[in-house]
Every structure is written in C-alpha cells, then in structure tokens.
Amino acid sequence: MNLNQLRYFVSVAENESFTKAAMSQYISQTAITQQIRSLEETVGAKLFDRNSRPVSLTPAGKVFLKEAREILGRMDVALSRIREASTGLEGELRLGYTKGYEHSDLPRYLRGFHQEYPNVLLLCYRCDTDMLASGLLNGEYDVIFTWDSTNIRQEEALELRVIEHVPLRVALYAEHPLARRTELSRKDLKQENILFMSPSGTGNSFGDAFYISLYQQAGYQPNILLRSNDMESILMMVAAEEGISIVPEYSHPWDIGTENVVFIPLSGEDETEEILIAWRKDNDSPALRHFLQKLPNG
Image (cartoon, rainbow, N blue to C red):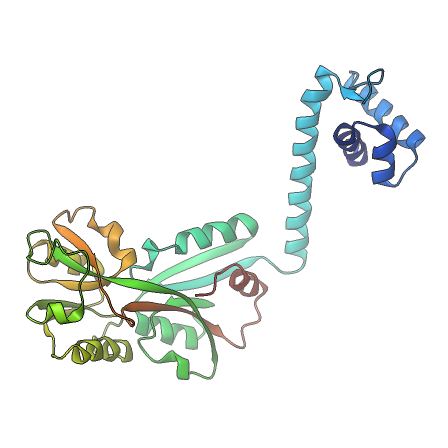
C-alpha cells in the first residue's frame, strides 16, 4: 500500500467513476484500475461494487474511505510541518503583554498560532507598559501588546500596528447611586473618588496624561485616591466601596469573586483603550512574521 493508491481510491470514491478519477489524477484508466486492485489485495477486501452504475463503495470500502482520508490528511500536516521546520519556522517567539490583557482575545490568537505552527514555542510575559517598551527596545521580546503609555510611536526602531480599540467601562459597587444607569460619561463622575487604572508602573506616563486630559475636558480635575496598574486590586477596592474606576471592557471576567462590582458603558468618542502591537524593525524572525500575519487589524 502506498499514498498514491490511497489518493486513487479516494478519487474513484468521490467521482463514482474509474474514468473520471483517472482523468482527475492524470493517469490512464487501466493504471488506476490496476492500482485499486492491488490495494484491495493488500487490505484483503473488495472496496468497490463494479457492477453498479455509478461505481459504488462496498461496506468495507465505506469504512476504508474514512480511514484513507484521515491518513492522507495526517500526511499533509506532517509534510507541512517538515517544510516549516526546514525553512526555519521553529524555535521560540517571546511575547509581552500589558497586565490584564490575558482576559482579552489574546489567548485565542496564541492558540490558533500554536495549532498551525507547533514547532514554535510561545514564551509569554505579563508586565506593565513601561517594562514592555523597554524590554522590546532592548531585544528581550519579539512582539508586545500594549497601551501607548510611553509614546512608543516616537521610537524609530519600532514598527507598530493598532490591533483593537477596547471600549471603557465604569466599575461601580452594586449599591452606588449610578449603578443602575445604562450609560455614563466622565461628567457624571465629577463628585466621585477615583481609583485610577494606570497603564504604567510609575502612574505618571504619556498614557496617564491622555486619560487625565479627558477628565479635564469634562470640566474638572479628578479626585484620585489611588493610581495603580493592578486591575485585580482596583476591582477589589471597588467591591469594598472605596471608590469607582474606569477600566477596559476585557476586565469583566474579574468580577468573579468581586460580585459587588457592576460595569457601565462609558460614552464619548475617545473612551477606548487603544491596544498596539509593536516589534523591532530589524527583527527578521520567520515566526514573528507569520504571527503578525495571523493578527487582525484594529
């Protein structure tokens, strides 16, 4: 038994004709008939009822068709992986992501890439945005998912792409007077104690300044009790009724264990978190190139 015999068998079964199968495989009808007979001798069973019109599978042939397709499919996958390995699509891809982004679609992107390129080891690092930008510039990461907290758009050594605009939500404790609203704006939060979700570890970055400016555009300076890039701690403090916060939409899975927290959509044209992917221009890794091709554009 060989792969060509399996391909000829599948072709006859799908075309229900030795003649049509021979034409599709670019061989003579005599040759394909001989190969099928040889295959039947090997498996020890008749695979086709040649007396029927069109040609039909015997019960044994129906069972064997499923197995033959699976064998051919596995062989195609194996050959594809061998070609990937021989062309360098193996090794590792070092990926950094901003804290909390593990609750987004990122795991789905990684799973899809791993299934297609299993020879590439994905190494994942969860950091604040300052460390991500610094690590990327120093060659510690191949690609990062980040907020633009450090104005990395100004870095000439980097390529960047927006992958998504994540809507922002107001996180409130359940008994808060605004908790039953269907939508809020920053103007509605003027009298509130704010637990400020910062993209950076310093709490005083380019990204922080942008979100502070949105409060100022709403007509006031926010009363900030705390600046932190630790989303879990912020939501725990909201649940404890210490204050309220504005968080990205992907923070919702964290309300497990903080059942006293509700999330209300925040209205406004700029009320999103822009997630960027960034990589070094001089990084010629085949794995990085294929990974970037698999990602959506925001």
